[in-house]
Image (tube, rainbow, N blue to C red; front, side, top):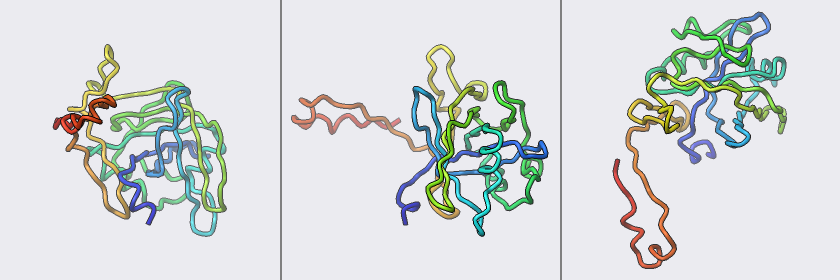
Length: 201
């Protein structure tokens, strides 16, 4: 019930390094940016049936490094393929039709096709229950597709960025239908003028 009401949720396609050196990729929608200064992300990690750790959790605990690869429409189906239950230490990258690029600050590759990739170092992993861990990571590097970020204004070019969100079960949502709202002054709220602040994009 909770996961069906707190929607939509952003999707992190997380890459980590397996013990055999291969790269693991797995999607998580219990994810968000936690802070801008310091730049932190949080991941909600669930254990496998039988209480064994998922590869992502194990690898983050072991290496202290991971990459959050954001998911847009162009890699949506390949993201879902990475959710399949591959054998331990077997990479999902090739079978899912994805490729890798070496990171600059950590020893975990990021997904070349991802619109945005955030290199992260583990701050802590907290266990709240036998089946639930919360990983907090500090962002130490960012990669974005060409044309996605205006380097002068440091703003996103939304015409080039179409992330998807998770609803529930196998339901997802696009982000094309956007609108803007300015925060009105208390005086405009009291006078009723705030109703005119919605502007269709």
